[in-house]
Image 1 (cartoon, rainbow, N blue to C red):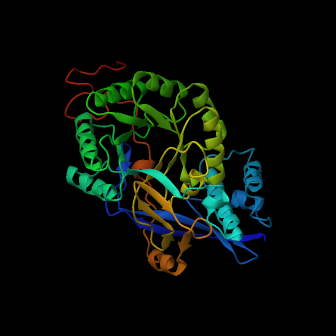
Image 2: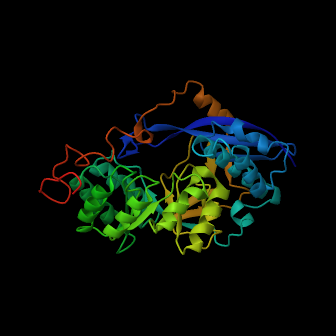
Image 3: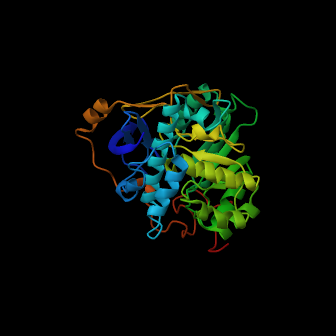
Length: 395
């Protein structure tokens, strides 16, 4: 079996709600979803998901090769761009191809990927995460009620701009998830919007009222000293890693003892996750995948010894995509279909995309002006961080 080519598709997911984080909110409830189909001379096709605009830079490393040699082909893709670098869009292309190759490998074996990778239990513990910063209180409660109906007892809120607002929402989340646990796990994601002083003051203020399991991306992803400073200043665990592209980017954070929860983005592929999980396990640290459509890393999560919990952002799938998995008992139940269990209806996708909207360059993927440089996180907030006293620069 040899790789002969690929097809690239773009579909959309309708979240049915506004989504965003401290950096911004998407202008539409529909977002683009990129799907890669890798073709072989045997007729088997592998599916990967995630943006892969730089695919032509690395596809030559796998074309004509046996897709079952996934790990070796992953390294060949990295080697193909070693002078120019593999971060960003290039790493996304490598990740999408890597997913498709693992999908092919498991399909060739006639088994789901979680079995090919050595998993025993097809249940993946998870937490609910609604990308929810734009929701009002009623909409927030209604969203997490739907997650609670599926047994979730852990959830993560977006925030970091308004202390009173965030406290009220965290308490509401605690009440909703309290249906399933006397002590639900509450996580909070600032999406790199703070400086280290803001992070410690904001989280310390939150912790006077709620017990946070972790604080996610409190400062910039590469700021090992800043993350370590936050970790020393708060009770909650510090989580980061979803935007790191390669083992070398984790090394300074681990060497600085800066993180407690090692996160990995789904869009960077199966092999990347397995390698990061192994490095984290060597430090006795847990690993947690950050969600993307179809949750492909869930298959790898059951095969590593240090998986903690997997983010679940929605209970539905993009247009034209069906996934052999269920959400129950507070997690993901993987199915028995060969490979990743992702079925693609190309005709439906093409019909939907015939008059599709252009990509929007705005929202949470664009860093706003003055992020991390504000005297207070939001000049319109009802009160300064930590109480009524005026916050001083650098305090």
